[in-house]
Amino acid sequence: MDWITNPQIWISLITLTALEIVLGIDNVIFISILAGKLPADQQAKARQTGLMLALVTRVLLLCSLAWMVKLTAPIFSVGEFSVSGRDLILLGGGLFLMVKSTMEIHEKLEGREAATQKKGPVKFNAVIAQILLLDIVFSLDSVITAIGMANTLWVMITAVVIALGVMLRYAGAISDFVHEHPTLKMLALSFLLLIGVTLVAEGTHQHVNKGYIYFAMAFSFGVELLNLKLRKKSAPVILRDGAP
Image (cartoon, rainbow, N blue to C red; front, side, top):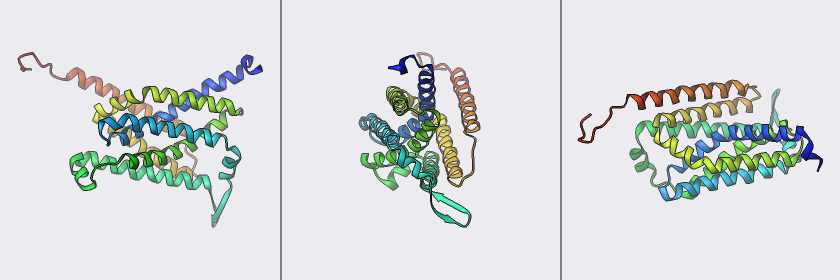
């Protein structure tokens, strides 16, 4: 019970939980965008299933630290460039995010009806499969961050569980907010495209300072919130008789 009076444990838990929540927002936004393709009565179920899969994936990865260490070991080399399992996952996940984000942006620009006629109705299992692939990519990044910040397994698992609990609580509100504002949805897709490029860069051993990435994203999001407030303030007031 020494952990109760150990301030280092509590500092690690609070800091890691806050960081997991920040890192998980990207996951929630993309899950919300994918779930938004389903009928209204299935969207909440898809979001909850996706986040629960993310929780299970992250806990399993944390419980298999020995396997996680092996992921950084080179599998093969191309000249002087060595490729590890982590590199392959980051490359695959980054390319997946880039392709998927680009397709979503194209669909929003071309119109949902045209895309729906070509592709047909979206199936629940297909959306869950895409969410699972996304969870694996984001979970790997999240777990590596957790391992670097805490040395105690139960602290890492507790932080992940708390963060996923917060995301489950507010996933619906985030989803509704994103879908109600088309420009914010486009900005979120652009963020995911940027994250995909970052993952590809890391998969090719190009170090990217994520502080700059998240600062740019936070700045862009702040500007967009100001634009939303300005548009709402500038919107014409409709009188009861229908005249502006």
